[in-house]
Image (cartoon, rainbow, N blue to C red; front, top):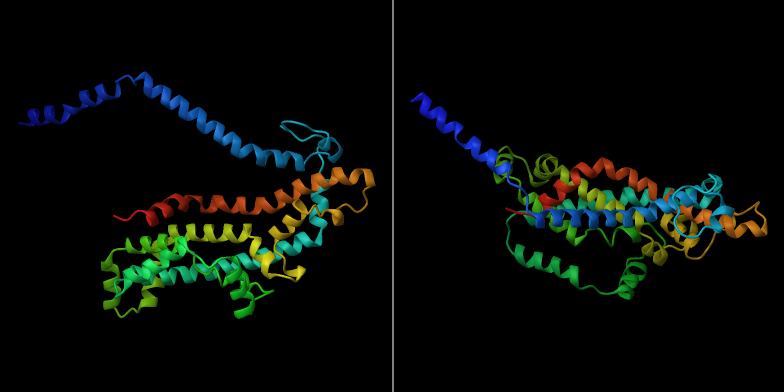
Length: 312
């Protein structure tokens, strides 16, 4: 009897061995090779512009302005452009304002989104109707002029950071993702907390949110990157230059070619050359901080998106 069982347990091994020994068809290998080549080209097309900006920002301005074609290494290593950028008070003020907006805005957005998502994850009357009304805002809006009039004239938030935070308190897409994640939390935990006397806010902050750290990390990344890259709202509502965020300063430098304040001490012939280097260095200064944050959230990113996007 023991021998029979032993033979029965050992039987699948040769079958597994035969399966692993099956030769992969030529069409499958061609598909894998084509897929790898296409993905490699996409990686190069995505990474090279950033690499070019990095190499250009580290190059000597006179050598850079005569460069044509690919740039694979710095042309005369020089950090003068970074010195000029960091000495510009507008850059430092922009950093300060952006960090204030990012921290305050992301915190406010996260709280409001969590409150809305938790409410929509519970069962209550008219839940479906309210959800349809929220989804409606993803496809239809009042437009730019009504938005400007609402914020500036009716809410009287013009020339304040509140104009950049309050109107966009909740992203509909992020709300749906977080709500779906909350719905995946076992109902038994919520019922047990209610039996122990825990209220709705206690359930949210003591049970639901601690169990939803991956999706919270994703929300922080989405909202944070949105605030870091935002410049249009600041251009509309902020008149005080001391309140300009970093991206609006970057726009002035790149689009309006406003590099005169960082070219002091350069001769007239060198101003065009050093101006190009300053533009590249400014891009790097404005981009690197948000890139350094991503690796700390990356481990939660895929899991958080999948948990919030797929409901069993």
